[in-house]
Length: 384
Image (cartoon, rainbow, N blue to C red; front, side, top):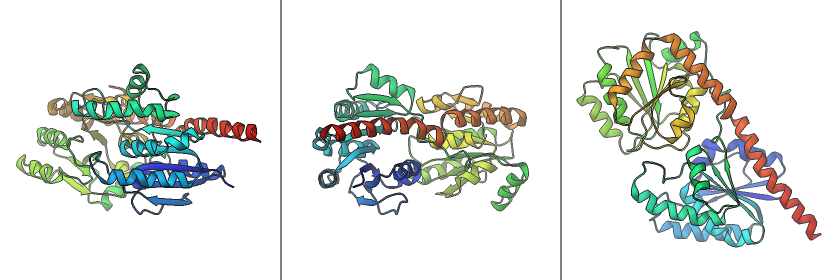
């Protein structure tokens, strides 16, 4: 009988977006792969998928039902490894796996950025910190994706059996790669942009944390100095309408393109000149790694995830929160210096290739997985 692994997260799109290479890796090792998450997406490399009623908010009553569903799923399947992701997916699956873990199941949890980071609201610390600290004792391996989280988990003596630092979820550096000038022109022409436009891209949900208003305010400051500047904002979310109104009020609605949800982020990056990011908090942002893989320089607000990726003054710049003047000054320097954009962009791509590519991250995760596979093999032989 094949050994089984269960991957759990709040929503199934999380696996489509970030984890298909790791599901594929388990299949190649001869394992049966199961997924438990909210949603009905069909995913490759998956033998069985459970639609579980997990909700993002910890206060939703559906999460009690989700816990019972997960507990039943885990009890009915002899999982050798359970790898859980996202805050609520991680909480519920670890609680549901307590008995299975006592019977030898290995439980891995990847924290995609603790909610109780430096500068986070007090409520986050009051709610998430004690939960994560408590559940660490029910975790065989706690994976963190940035140095701040790793340092906090180790310094605060989280009682996971192992605490590891893995450089994110990995970026496909073949799919996300720079293109020649002619190809860039074609991509622009297909989307109604000219070679003379200076294109700045940010792909993120419109919410308070992503803080797109800072980018709109910054563009308003340079609209006359750099008439060719265009801000491309891909995504949807609760703050979209207010951001559109802000652009109109500042007189730059013709320079801000609200692109909606997109499936062509790779092409949008390849045709752009600069990646910008305005978020208040990040774990290790995939959108920035993808931009760096496409050899774009990055101007971003300073937070733990951006600090992990951006070497200030080398492959981009880090900006004080809510400082549109500082943001504007950096944008203007790059808009007027193509040579600097190129050198910064190439350094960023080199960094992603060396640390954050899918292959590099898979190598790190494979070491963790193989350690538990060997332990399970040894335990099986001991029984026989």
